[in-house]
Length: 84
Image (cartoon, rainbow, N blue to C red; front, side):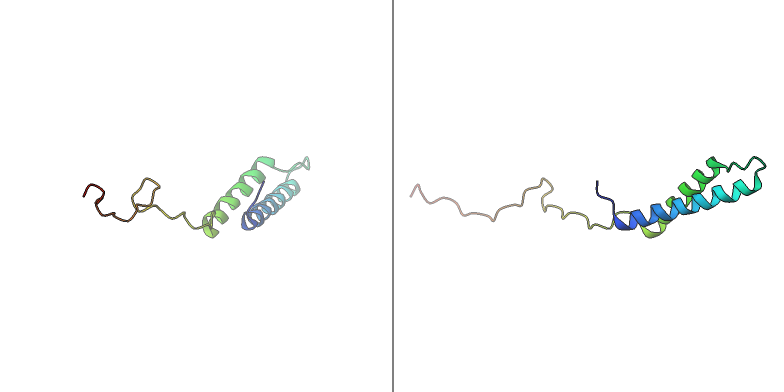
């Protein structure tokens, strides 16, 4: 499993935001339980926004073949002179 370093940082940042949202809602709740759904939604929203802002895949696209079928056309050849 290979995770892009930028993607890992974005995921950790989203988890931290989700943690703080959960702790903030726990202080407001009388039972002391935080709003886990709100925390997950906040983390997912932050992760989505950060991926849209900073981009996802930073690899260049593969070069396309000149004739579209994956084969590079060979140089034109002259007609055979074997029959002369």
